[in-house]
Length: 171
Image (cartoon, rainbow, N blue to C red; front, side):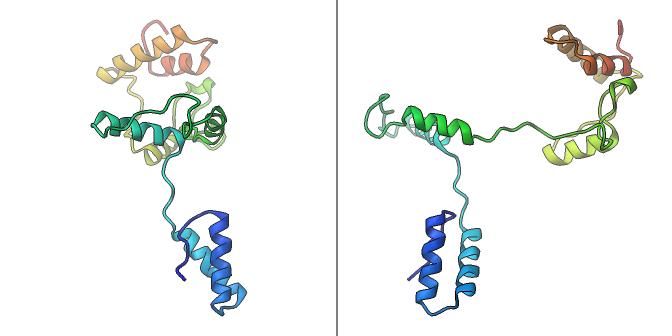
């Protein structure tokens, strides 16, 4: 009997049972089940991914339609709550003053070379060192960060410190 290629606990148990019934020792059966579980394709998306995919199919003329709220087969309020709990929250790259990846506010805030390298590696971006001597990057940075300070809910000390470090006018 072929093994179930799935990451679920039920499939894992069935795969172990199938291997033991086939005459393999329990430890070997468990190892095989783990191997199959690791090799199983990762289930992509979830509730919102499915909704988005269906909307795309409808837009492309599939003839399907979205079910009404509360109708049979439509996602329930509980399904939406569960989906919100398990949704991936992309908080970005974790950088720390203690690890030397960003400067403390007393030294002008901003990222160190180590922090820029970590952010570039994690996100594929191309962050560059500050350009306090002038130029288009300085003008752009000063304009953006001035807006951050202006619209911040609190004091925004890191933004203010970085404006000073870049030698932005009026800071």
